Image (tube, rainbow, N blue to C red; front, side):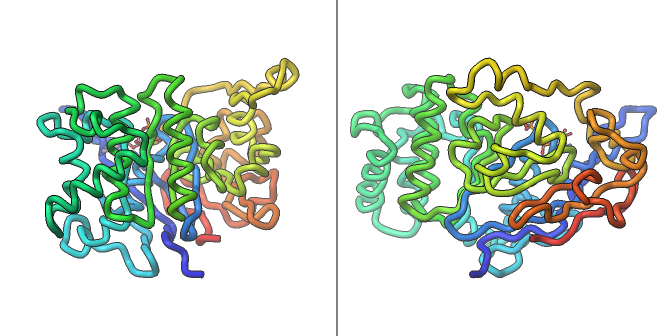
Length: 339
Ligand SMILES: Nc1ncnc2c1ncn2[C@@H]1O[C@H](COP(=O)(O)OP(=O)(O)OP(=O)(O)O)[C@@H](O)[C@H]1O
C-alpha cells in the first residue's frame, strides 16, 4: 500500500537571533527524521519541549520546506508552500493547534466558520447544513453553533476547530498539542473525540504531544524524539510496555500507567543534566550527557536509527545502533531511510 505520508531524512535549521556582537546560533530543530504513515494510521510524536515536534509537523504539511530531505503526500512530492497546488492539497491534510481561540475568528459565529471551507465551493445553505451536522457530530448543540468563540469553553472551541478541519474530508490530521491548553478534566473527552472520529473516518493522524499519557490513548505507533531526531519508534503498546532506548525508558517511567501502584512509580528514572538545547547539540549521541548508561563511544559516535525487532527502531549503541554514525554536532545526518 502506498504510504499516505513519507518523510525522508528531513532536516530543518533555523538561525536564532544573535544580537549586536554575537553571530546567530544555528538551531537544528529537526536533524534527520525519516518516517512513513499509512492511510488511517495514527502516529504519536513525543518529546520534551524543543525536541522539534512542531517543526516536524509543519514540514510534514508543507507549511515550510525542509532544508534537506523529502516530503511525499499520497505518493507525490509536497508542493512548495502557499502555491495553488499546496492549497489544493491542504484540503486533504489539516492541522489542529494547541490554541483554539487563536485559530478562530472572534468576529464570526462558529457555525459560519465551520461552513467556510465549503462556501467557496458550493451553495451557502448547503454548507451551513453540513456545518450544523458536523458540529453536532463533535458534540455541540444547535444553540452552541450560533455562538461566538469567546462564548464557548476551551474544550468546546477545540471541538469547533476539529469540526472545521473535518469539513473538507481530509485524509490526514496533524494535531499539535491539541489538548495541552485544556483543563485536565476536559482533555480526555477531546482525545476520545479525536480517537472516535479517526476510527469512524479512517483518518490518518499525527498526534504531537509532550505528554506520553495522552499520546498513548490515540496512537497505534509512537515515535520518541530527542533533539530533532527519532531515538525510538514502534507499535505504541509494545513500546510503552517495554521501551528500549534509555531516553524512552525515562519518559515511559515518568508517565504513570492507570491502575499501576507504588511499585510502578518507584521505578521512575530521573534524568540528570541540562534539558536539551538544539543550539548546543552535544557531540556523538545527543542524549549522552544525560544518559544513565553512557559509554565512551557515545561521546563521539552518533548511533543510527536501526531495527531492533520487526517494526521497532532505536538509535543507541547498546541496542546495536552502532555502524557508521557520524558526529551530529556539526555535520551531516546519520539517520537511515524510512523503514
Ligand atoms: N521559526 C523559528 N525560528 C527560530 N527557531 C525556531 C523556529 N521554530 C522553532 N525554532 C526552534 O527550534 C527548536 C525546536 O522547536 P519546536 O517548536 O519544533 O519543538 P517542540 O518539540 O515542538 O517544542 P514545544 O513542545 O515547546 O513546542 C526550538 O529550539 C525552537 O526554539
